[in-house]
Image (cartoon, rainbow, N blue to C red; front, side, top):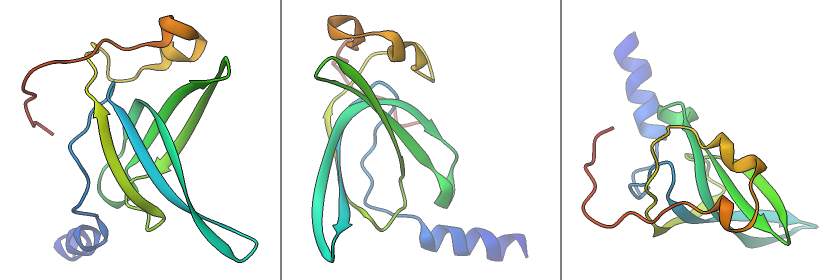
Length: 121
């Protein structure tokens, strides 16, 4: 029974997700339907958290726009997500970047990571 559940969850998971971690800046495009029309909305931000696993995995993005901090959470395996693109790699020493919530301007920046990254998960 447990194997059947794992197989069903694997079928629902997306295989086209790029390798990204907390601290990376990504551009995430989602489909939005308003008034019978569908359009693609792009949200670019720093990955604050990456929670869960399997079909219920979520990612929270943080960005500062017009002096105000914004946070948005997305289900990674949602059919509404069109694409995910890694803009730059970040170098952080935390698994959750909640300290970015109170920061604005240059204080909300994450150092850029240069070099190969191990793909442990």
